[in-house]
Image (tube, rainbow, N blue to C red; front, side, top):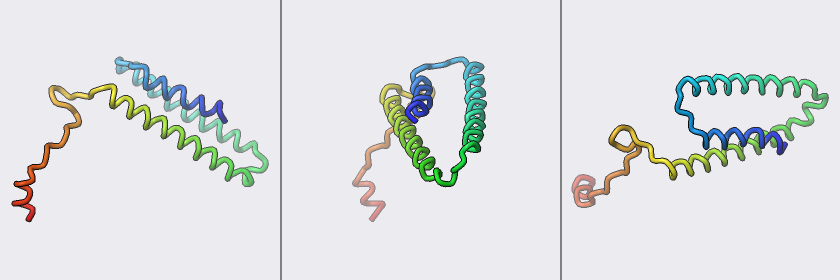
Length: 113
Protein backbone atom coordinates (compact mmCIF):
# COMPACT_ATOMS: atom_id res chain seq x y z
CA UNK A 1 0.00 0.00 0.00
CA UNK A 2 2.90 2.34 0.67
CA UNK A 3 4.13 1.88 -2.89
CA UNK A 4 0.67 2.79 -4.20
CA UNK A 5 0.67 5.91 -2.07
CA UNK A 6 4.12 6.80 -3.38
CA UNK A 7 2.91 6.32 -6.97
CA UNK A 8 0.08 8.79 -6.31
CA UNK A 9 1.98 11.41 -4.30
CA UNK A 10 5.18 11.64 -6.34
CA UNK A 11 3.48 12.93 -9.53
CA UNK A 12 1.35 15.22 -7.38
CA UNK A 13 4.40 16.88 -5.83
CA UNK A 14 6.24 17.02 -9.16
CA UNK A 15 3.20 18.54 -10.82
CA UNK A 16 3.20 21.39 -8.33
CA UNK A 17 6.94 22.03 -8.64
CA UNK A 18 7.39 21.92 -12.43
CA UNK A 19 6.04 24.87 -14.41
CA UNK A 20 5.07 24.23 -18.03
CA UNK A 21 4.31 27.26 -20.17
CA UNK A 22 3.70 25.58 -23.53
CA UNK A 23 -0.03 25.13 -24.18
CA UNK A 24 0.54 22.24 -26.60
CA UNK A 25 2.67 20.41 -24.04
CA UNK A 26 0.03 21.02 -21.35
CA UNK A 27 -2.65 19.59 -23.65
CA UNK A 28 -0.48 16.54 -24.33
CA UNK A 29 0.13 16.02 -20.60
CA UNK A 30 -3.60 16.33 -19.87
CA UNK A 31 -4.42 13.70 -22.50
CA UNK A 32 -1.73 11.39 -21.11
CA UNK A 33 -3.08 11.82 -17.57
CA UNK A 34 -6.63 11.06 -18.72
CA UNK A 35 -5.44 7.96 -20.58
CA UNK A 36 -3.42 6.77 -17.59
CA UNK A 37 -6.44 7.14 -15.30
CA UNK A 38 -8.48 4.87 -17.57
CA UNK A 39 -5.58 2.41 -17.75
CA UNK A 40 -5.28 2.34 -13.95
CA UNK A 41 -9.03 1.75 -13.64
CA UNK A 42 -8.74 -1.13 -16.10
CA UNK A 43 -5.92 -2.73 -14.12
CA UNK A 44 -7.83 -2.27 -10.87
CA UNK A 45 -10.88 -3.95 -12.36
CA UNK A 46 -8.81 -6.88 -13.63
CA UNK A 47 -7.11 -7.31 -10.25
CA UNK A 48 -10.47 -7.15 -8.42
CA UNK A 49 -11.96 -9.77 -10.69
CA UNK A 50 -9.17 -12.15 -9.69
CA UNK A 51 -10.07 -12.03 -5.98
CA UNK A 52 -11.97 -15.10 -4.84
CA UNK A 53 -13.28 -13.67 -1.58
CA UNK A 54 -14.09 -10.14 -2.75
CA UNK A 55 -17.16 -9.72 -0.55
CA UNK A 56 -15.22 -10.47 2.62
CA UNK A 57 -12.52 -7.92 1.72
CA UNK A 58 -14.78 -5.01 0.76
CA UNK A 59 -14.46 -3.31 4.14
CA UNK A 60 -10.67 -3.52 3.95
CA UNK A 61 -10.69 -2.13 0.41
CA UNK A 62 -13.00 0.69 1.48
CA UNK A 63 -10.73 1.55 4.39
CA UNK A 64 -7.69 1.63 2.12
CA UNK A 65 -9.54 3.83 -0.37
CA UNK A 66 -10.61 6.21 2.40
CA UNK A 67 -7.06 6.41 3.75
CA UNK A 68 -5.62 7.07 0.29
CA UNK A 69 -8.26 9.73 -0.37
CA UNK A 70 -7.59 11.42 2.97
CA UNK A 71 -3.82 11.52 2.55
CA UNK A 72 -4.06 12.76 -1.05
CA UNK A 73 -6.52 15.48 -0.04
CA UNK A 74 -4.30 16.55 2.83
CA UNK A 75 -1.26 16.82 0.54
CA UNK A 76 -3.31 18.69 -2.09
CA UNK A 77 -4.60 21.24 0.39
CA UNK A 78 -1.15 21.69 1.94
CA UNK A 79 0.44 22.23 -1.47
CA UNK A 80 -2.28 24.69 -2.50
CA UNK A 81 -1.83 26.63 0.73
CA UNK A 82 1.93 26.73 0.18
CA UNK A 83 1.50 27.86 -3.42
CA UNK A 84 -0.97 30.58 -2.45
CA UNK A 85 1.61 31.95 -0.01
CA UNK A 86 4.46 31.66 -2.49
CA UNK A 87 2.83 32.98 -5.68
CA UNK A 88 0.78 36.12 -6.23
CA UNK A 89 -1.88 35.71 -8.87
CA UNK A 90 -2.70 38.77 -10.91
CA UNK A 91 -5.04 39.47 -13.82
CA UNK A 92 -3.77 42.53 -15.64
CA UNK A 93 -3.21 45.40 -13.22
CA UNK A 94 -5.57 44.17 -10.52
CA UNK A 95 -5.18 41.21 -8.18
CA UNK A 96 -7.46 38.26 -8.80
CA UNK A 97 -8.59 38.04 -5.18
CA UNK A 98 -9.29 41.43 -3.68
CA UNK A 99 -9.28 42.07 0.01
CA UNK A 100 -12.64 43.30 1.34
CA UNK A 101 -12.95 46.97 2.16
CA UNK A 102 -13.12 47.93 5.83
CA UNK A 103 -16.62 48.40 7.15
CA UNK A 104 -17.78 51.93 7.79
CA UNK A 105 -19.67 51.37 11.05
CA UNK A 106 -21.30 54.81 11.16
CA UNK A 107 -22.83 54.32 7.75
CA UNK A 108 -23.83 50.76 8.57
CA UNK A 109 -25.55 51.86 11.79
CA UNK A 110 -27.64 54.39 9.92
CA UNK A 111 -28.64 52.00 7.14
CA UNK A 112 -28.90 48.82 9.20
CA UNK A 113 -30.96 50.13 12.10
